[in-house]
Amino acid sequence: MAIGGVLAYRALFNWTRPAIFVGTLLVGPLFQLLFFAYLGRQLQVADDRFYVVGNAVLAATLAGVFGGTLAVGNERRYGTLGHVLLSPRSRTAVFLGRALPYAGNGVLIAVVTMTVGATLLGLRFPVGAIPGLLLAMAVGSLACAFFGLTLGALGLRFRDVWVVSNVAVALLLLLTGVNVPSTALPGWMVKIGEFLPITHAASAARDLAAGHGLAAAAPALGREALVGLGYAILAAVLLKVFETESRRTASLETL
Amino acid sequence: MRTLRMLALGTLAHVKQMSRSSFEVTIALVVPIVQATLAVYLFRAGHERHALLQAAVGAGLMGVWSSVLFGSGGAIQNQRWQGTLEMIMLVPRRPVLVILPITVATGLTGTYALLATLAWGRLLYGIRLDFVHPVGFVVAAVVCIVALGMFGLLLASTFVLMRNANALTNTLEYPIWLVSGMLVPITVLPAWTGPIAAVLPTTWGARALREATTGGPVWPSVTVCLGISLLCLAVGSISLTYVERRARAAATLALA
Image 1 (cartoon, rainbow over the protein chains, first blue to last red):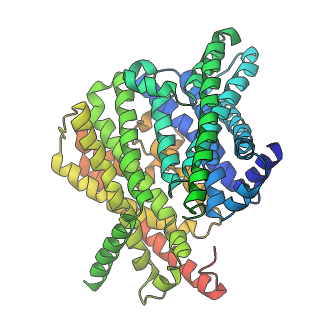
Image 2 (tube, chains in turn brown, orange):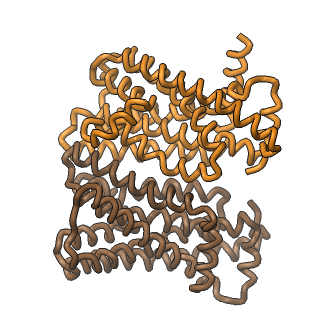
């Protein structure tokens, strides 16, 4: 799982061009954080801490959702899906392993976004909260990567999986309560948000950043882990179903 | 007259081509609506309930910018990928006349974002479309879209020189939303962003639309927006000619 994941990750990001990584995954989320922090200040919706913590955790979605989607989608696009599926190893292990590097990447992005964002806006966090914040970012990133893999599984069935991932990222911005406090959102949006990654991780991270300690954040972290587990199972099931269907109809690599 | 006809037909052709892409259409349909919803709930949560129309207009303009940024930023690269760049560059007209229709088309398709956010706000959230200067709003919107098309030409001509242009495209969405004051007033930003904002056509376009919505001197902002955009057109035109000659000399036109 680990070796396959790392190889796929290196192929995806093509490290000969680090500008793409820095521009897309580090600078972009930072400006998103600043945009909402200044908007929040102007509208007096919430303080800077709310936006810095929330958007830092949300920053992991880019790596998780797009990474997970491409983990499956690119195999099909580059004509290598057949080779992967010829492997005698478990499909579940092959594809779920892909999610691990994206989750690690998500943590890196979240840490950079939070550190630079907090420095620019003059925020400080209790030192004791840092391990807990890292844990919240890790759980959130992993849930996001499995969510991305679920969307990627749709790529075995539908032609244009980019549409799904782009719309999903936009919806996460609205429904996770990262930028609009959940008290200001309609009940049905809050309900949907509870089944999406990041919602509970952001809530836990906010508790930790406020100095409430790991015990206070543990229930939200547990819920985030459950959401992640749910998407991992769903991804495995969808991959299995769509693979079987694609073999039956001989449409495995039909774009 | 022939040049205007060519520009109009070229723009129409590219709008039609974009409308055939399920990705472009779906993203253009959904994302502005999500952004408008986010803006409405944020403004409602804050103390700016009276400014919901302003929020809808701002969110719409954000959608126009996204369309221009991603469309124009990749205008030349997309032609290259489709294998049509050499053919359109063989046309016996100046490169600017061939590429400008593409970038204006991205602005035109972005118009949907503005219209959709206003319709969405009216139908779902009951936002009354009481513009202080309705005529000024329409003129400002048209100028803004044409201006962004010209700004897009400058982006397209600049990006073609850069190997990692898509990295810059992905990075530029939020900074322009922020610095141009589309939703966040420029006055709350650090002072050093002021000069950057002042040279961007998006700032003056957003300001013109805001003044037409809430009241204020619309026409000076419209004029400055148009002036800066014409400057972008001139610089973009020179840049495109230079890039085209260099690419022909080095035989790299079709190479990524």
